[in-house]
Image (cartoon, rainbow, N blue to C red; front, side, top):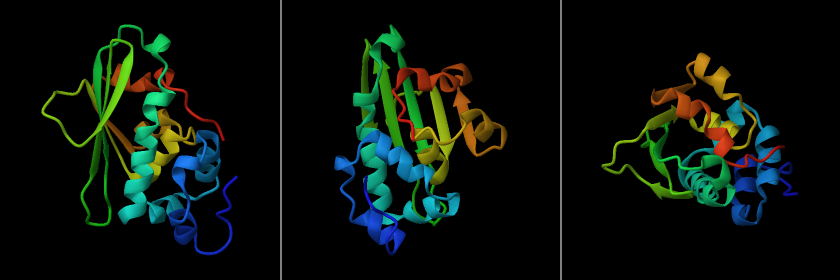
Length: 160
């Protein structure tokens, strides 16, 4: 397991090779951090590295047997609270395959999920309850709410 308990949290995580961290280990790291700490690490280059690694793993975590014939474009918008731009990723599920792209396409999403960076990390690591986040307005859903509420069944979400 990666040791991030030593000195400065941001420096510890900045030196971490996220590609060598298993999804379960990532979930344990996220579980061990407070919402404030999660917010602190989600800035600048570290934020970009973390988001790209999480979205990059979606294809491997995808469960085609659960998706069946689902055809959907899911847009993820991770907001920035530091004056920087929001990050947008899109997950396309079609024909039993999952493709992920960075940025906002011209295609119309079936559902759009908007959340802060700490909430995204909690959801992606199974350390947050999407229903609670939705009710507390920390997760906003536009479009097909039914699809959004069932997204976890299409992916192997790591457990801490």
